[in-house]
Length: 271
Image: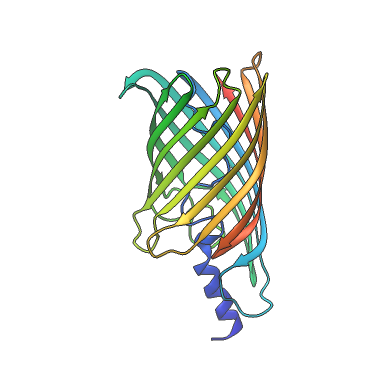
């Protein structure tokens, strides 16, 4: 096989590794990520930038240039109802991302467009010093997926969520959270994936500071694995009923995938 064909084949095989095999992007939640808000309507907009030029665990021809840059804006709408189910508040959510990917693996492919649509439901529980959430939803293949850098994945995926937040004192100014996502695709060639996001947070007035991170494992016969750690800061304006949260993550211990840096800003608006 000549170099051109080898690079083209590698580009196609690596398409799921540009971000991850699953459709959920880890690193967009952090401190108190498993706390469901009170009944109401909410908008969350996630702006994410990812940049990586290290490709780990993949054999390519010598001196092959590899790099990926991804910019995404994910629009998430949440409705938490007054209805109680299993002792918790019932809610519904929808996510629609717009993604621009600039992928270089020997040759270059750059695409921009709407990604796959997610629709799901959730239940949130609240205790004196803890919160928990469980959710389920479907990623539908609404985005274009014919080229390696296209924003869509080309398959339907079930995503199950389970997480909790623990507060170390009655003032609730020190917290530890963990939020897990388990993804199951309807395509036999795509392995299941587990993502865990965590955050250790300190709340001071209207400011939240935190040490955050995420881990991702491709399950079944897959060997892809990614871990990251970072810091975050957030602030909420009561008069505007709006908050902003920013975080930066550095990936490490990557197996079969890109290793890079991720920066995200999340805007929350309460209606």
